[in-house]
Image (cartoon, rainbow, N blue to C red; front, side):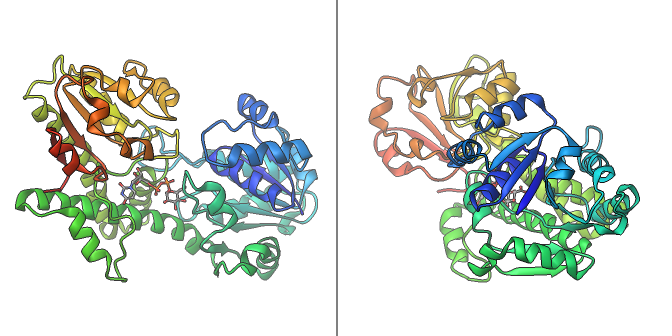
Length: 437
Ligand code: UGA
């Protein structure tokens, strides 16, 4: 099919590339000239495993190209995926949906034949209904310009895999024609066993924020447990393993640590609370405020722990940090707990040296005053304390012997609960983690 993808950031660039890979002809609409130029040359403006090779291949073959013209976009295909961002608004907890509104308003006046616009962006419930009305009003094709809402569940670091092999396909529609078109479009995934949920707009929109709210709640639950474990001498990893064997609970997303970050979970739960307030059901969502508070407290606790581990005075303390990205296999530092902690320590007078295998450049853009090292070992040179904050695989391979003669004091904090602290202790290191014995 000939399809278009409006907004070629994380979600859009991945969707456009993966759909070209599946054999569709794809036109990406991107208004940012730098991003568009990079994509047109086959370059991905962020780090995502496997995406760059796939993008280049499909750009080279001509299956995927990019434009900044809505007229060209409307003329190119009959299925238009809206993948623009919905960041947190500047002055409230709400999601800023202006990019979605602009995409619909930009495309609609050019839709002069039947077309299906498919929203994939994460939006406050009620947005699709409004956008559907706007589409019908502005499109010359009138009611023949339809809207469907089809949320995306891809994870950074696994974006290509999640797009090509989704664990479910959720489609919010107003009539059977849109459903049929999307069922045909997603036939390879459906034949592959992906379950399909056909529902209304509001449910489709809510599924996405409810999923992220549940994941965030799971993480804050285990982090709250970590604090209780610390007060009682219990061990949160054993606890998570034990409750995780219960299939109703499940072990995934029960890794206690410095908390969740990124461009999705934090902003989505805040936007959800805000929207619940507008809908008059704020009380039902109060627990999400606590989820956010627990998450924020984890970061603050690490700053206090670091202070204690350097002897009570951060001023002038040398701290080596492993990790800046909000999670491994990503160069994304949006709302990254690792970078937040590094920044706070720096502002408290510590001399912080950060190393991240992929995110040093993005981190330096948002936090230029920190020092960035070229290797994990260099980050620890003369350090009084080493903080492990993002669980990149290469950090697990570092041994106490690698840091012999490098650090000034053998003191290690594991903020992700994945290092083998017994082996560090046996080598004479003082260690601490969150919720661990
Ligand atoms: C999240 C969801 O997992 C995706 O399903 C969703 O599509 C996406 O948001 C989105 O809305 O676009 P992502 O932001 O890529 O995906 O990251 P996650 O893998 O969910 O991790 C989020 C944060 O939670 C990371 O900072 C991670 O370190 C942290 N985390 C995760 C924990 O602290 N403990 C865990 O057990 C799991």
